[in-house]
Image (cartoon, rainbow, N blue to C red; front, side):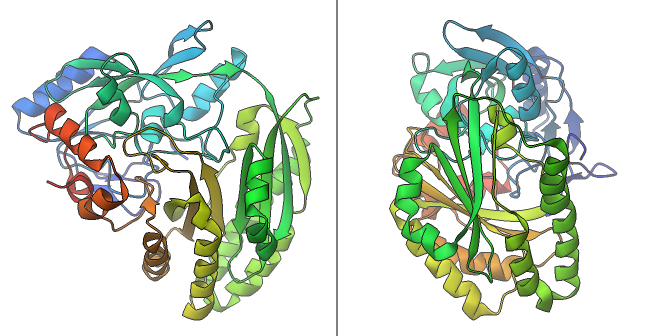
Length: 439
C-alpha cells in the first residue's frame, strides 16, 4: 500500500476508495513555519485548508476543493523525556514508524489500534482506538499538542496550557487547526500475552462482563450467518517472549487473514449465495493460539483486504443487547455479510468529542469489502446503533448530523464554541464538518 492514498490528475482518493476530491492545490510543507505560511496564503487566496494523512478515514473528513496539506515531511521524533515519560513527534509520523522508533528506545504506547498505517495526527484527530479495560484511545494518551490555527499562528496546549483547547483538540476533527506535533505519554516497553480462541457467540454475550473485567484488553470478531466468534485477550506478561513462529504467522496472518480472506471476498462478491457457507468455513479456519511479544506486534496486524467500515460506540452496558439486535436484523433481512463484526471496549475519557467521552463504551464495527454495495447493511445497522444513543467513529461511514451529536454529546456546545473562537471564518471547513458540527 502506498504511504498515502491518492489518485491521478489532481484527484485525491481515500484508502477505502469511497471518497474523492479535487483540491485547488497541494502543499507538502517541510517545517511548521512553511505550514503556517501555507495557511496564511490560503486565507489570502480565499481558499479553505485541510490536512490529510494516509486517507484511512471512510468519511470525507479530509476532502477539500481548497488547499490540501500533506504532512509527510513533518515526521520523526522531536523529543524524548524519560523522566516525564513522554515523547513528542511530528504530526505526519506514521504510527508504524512511531512504534518501531519507540521500541528501539525501549519504550511503548500503553494501548493502540489494530492498524498502524495512519499518521499520528490523522489517527488521533478522528478518535482511532484499540480495546482496553483501563486504557483508552490513542488520543487519550496525549499529553500535549501543537497546532497552527486559522490566522497562521502556532498554539500549544496541555492540561496546564490552554486547557480548554486541550480538552477538545485531542480529537479535533481537523476543525480547530492543523496539528503539527503531538506529545504522547509512553512507558518502558513491556510484553503482552495474546490468547486467541474461538468461542460461541451466545457464550461471549452471556459472559461479556466477566471477559471484560478479567482482561486488560478484550475483543472479539463475530462471523455473521454463524454462531461463532474469535476472541482475543491481551494481558501483560512477565515473559519470556514467545512470538508466533514465522511460518505459522505467515499462514495465519497473511494467508488466512489476508490472502484466503481476499479470495473468499471475491467469491462472495461474484456469488453472494455462497457467503453463509464461506462464513462457516472462515469462522473455523482460525484455531486457538497463544503468543507473547512486544505491544505493537500484539495489538496491530496487516490489513491488505480493502474494505469500507461503519463503527459506533454504544454504552458498554448495552453491547450484548445491541449485538443480539444486529444478529436478528442480519438473519431477517436476507443480507449476505461476508466480513466479521469487530467488538472492542474503551473506558470513559474527558475529551470533548471522544466517542468514549464521559461514558464507558463498547465499539461495534461493521465492514463490507471495497466495491460491494454496503448501504442497505450499514443503514439497518445504524438504525440499531442510534437507538442505543450510539456515537459514530468520526472517520467511519455514518449519516449523523450536528443535531444528533448535540443530543449524544453533553459537551457538544463546548466544542462548537471553541471552534467559533479559533476558526471564526471557517477556514478549516468542508462539507463533512458542516454536516457534523453545523454551519
